[in-house]
Image (cartoon, rainbow, N blue to C red; front, side):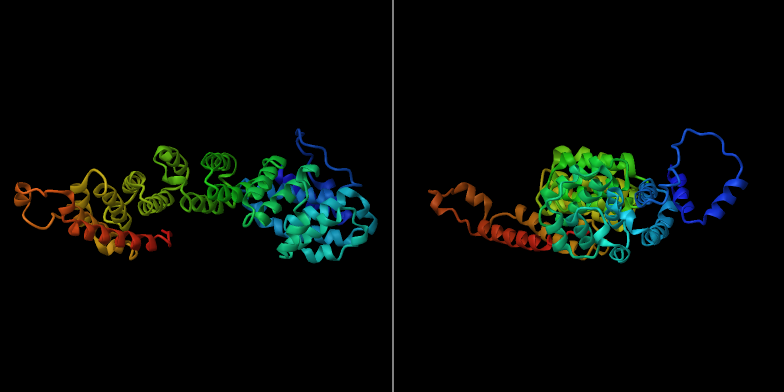
Length: 407
């Protein structure tokens, strides 16, 4: 449906004589169960032109590279037709709404400002809010659009407005933004608006620590839009939502994380597992550190820097849990030159902490066994206290190092 609609819009820009010649010389088409074309009297109506634009943009969500390459030219052509339209055209409420949709679909505000504003039949706050948004006046746009109820508008317009509200309030009012992005998805399913809403919402849901919804949105995107031109942006937001929160740090749901990561390419999976392992390590989640480290080991190449980092994370998880000797040996065998510079202090601190844990108390153990202290008050805790102090200092250093969690 995308290409026929796109052609229909382009046809409206041809002189009538050229259209007739094309119609007379073209071979008779094979009958097909397609929707009847709009009557000639409405073919140039702004709302029909905008419908064609939306159809082309929906092709972008499906991965149509031709649609992606042509929609900018189509926006320009529609702008020219808007400027050429008779002033009475804008009395039609559908055409007034089309102006707002045109703006929110990438239309030029310069074009809209040249239209006869007093003739455009559309809610003033909606019109001014859309114009403020595309011109970068965010505070004004928030004030004008905040109270607009997308579900009270026609779905084509309401979905666009809901998507914009989600973007406007994402930083300061995440819950409100999530509600509006839900509206956008429900009002315009199967469109570029839904695809964009999913991309925006997954990051907000991740920051809100709502794992079930995070998983639901991810699977919905994979199911419907994995071929989208903007899929790369989605996976970037997915990664941020997963690693900048505690979503991946629960051992009980790690298998579900693995299922989600299976949907992306091997290199991206490896990178994410390494980020998860490091995040879990500095958060004290040793079970997840080990699980993610072992996954990274299976995906990394022999003698690679990624392989050394995976051994590092697994070694840490072992030495600080129930495999002290094996973990310490794994850490000592690391090729430090292949670790990230910021990981080396973590390695040093971990090895020192592990050695301190096994360091014997001062004095002769045998003598201490023969002459136990008379009362607890006589126990010499100086060595233990010093060890704990060193450990606390090292943990403080680890906390400082966690401020930068980029892989």
